[in-house]
Length: 419
Ligand code: UD1
Image (cartoon, rainbow, N blue to C red; front, side, top):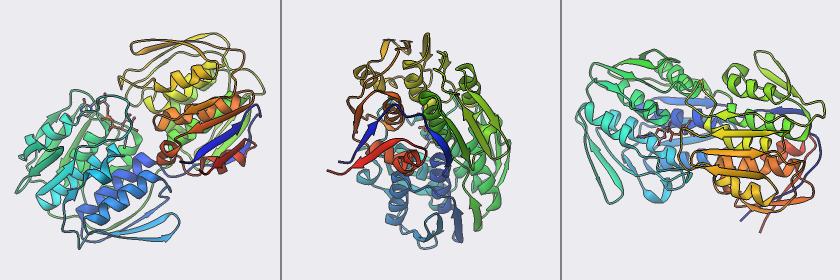
């Protein structure tokens, strides 16, 4: 298993180009099942979750060609096998995203219950109950969701909680359903807007992107489209914290700062100087130690749960005491134990962690436990005295493209160790 070796204590300085968003690429890849025409996607990030999705679609008979590193052509005209096997999907919860398109297009789907990050129970009841409301027959047995529907019908759906992938699944299923589907209390993440823009290029009729009420009028068929994947706000947020935690100065290119508002506000609160334009963001800590800042995660436009672990690392060396409250997932503090091994002073009480900023952290051998937890360990290691080895970095490779190259290019002492 690959590991990362990081020797900390160097302020980062320079420019990083942000990759396409994982959480945008995955639903858009699965949406390609909805048409027989070719789809061309640019700015697709080179990530393990993307490879898993590509492999999954290929097992269904979808033809996928990589024209250059980041452009993919997808053709689903020969897809005949609406089946997603456990072996392929166990590492990636987002595999549930094939359920809506398969049911909408083929009238049948058999999809393994997903795995992915172990950050909580992560049920799929909203996906299943909503599709049932649209007329699907669904049985869950042997670890598989078996769904059939001759023709899905429009329905009014009200989510108990705004789920990102459930919103995406239902939007995709509804594009080819009979009549109108209305999703209330829908999630509003920018990646959902990106999916809606893409589906509209395919001929879907959707209103309400970026709002909590989305209306989809079913059409008979969808056509091919070209699309540039949105840039990754969580990757960008992680590198902004890398600058803040090392007292550095970075410019991140190819990013929409408007999608990062809640993160930028918190970085300013921690003492960072931020400059934004339409497609870049610059952060300068001017060598100062960050100030402690309280975080309360929530659905977009709230503070992203996917940035919570990174702010735990930042607060671990900040001046003062902070409280971080995780409201989205019930078990998302696994990074805290590893941060403690590096000298962080923290105390967990249910969904809240209280952190007393330490003057410094020390390098240690630590273990990545999930995708964003791994990122927090890399950040802590960049600020720590001495050498840190981060083990099990396959979690990082699921969601960060070439993390060691991007960080070394701005001055970090980081290298990948092969077994
Ligand atoms: C997506 C993101 C993930 C991010 C998360 C929250 C993708 C591929 N992944 O995950 O990076 O951390 O949003 O921003 O886009 N819930 C239910 N029942 C369901 C579905 C969800 O109760 O059927 C609950 C979850 O347990 C959780 C909350 O809804 O408490 C939000 O989860 P959800 O938005 O579904 O997360 P994902 O879509 O899996």
